[in-house]
Image (tube, rainbow, N blue to C red; front, side, top):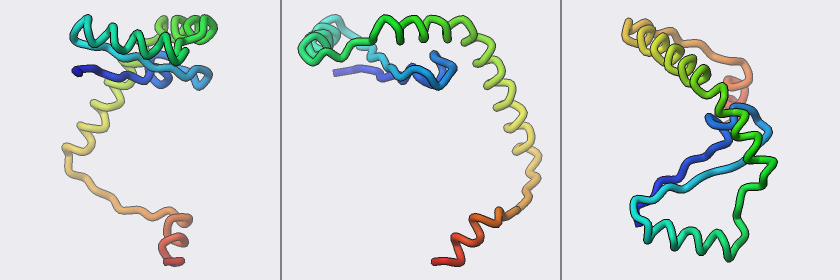
Length: 98
């Protein structure tokens, strides 16, 4: 079966108040088999969570644009080859325990 699983909580929801996911399939036959599984196990999204996800869709373009901008800035910084090594005290103490 060719299917793609997407977690809706992070990017679609945009908040930390919803948990959800979706599965997309390539063929109708695969979708029907998954639909049967959903109907027999009761794994459906509640109307409340659906409303929260719809709310998150409103700001999705803004959030994705910001994610891309930040990723570009990080890539430009890393392309310069500037490296700096720093230690955080908590990590250093943890290493010392081993």
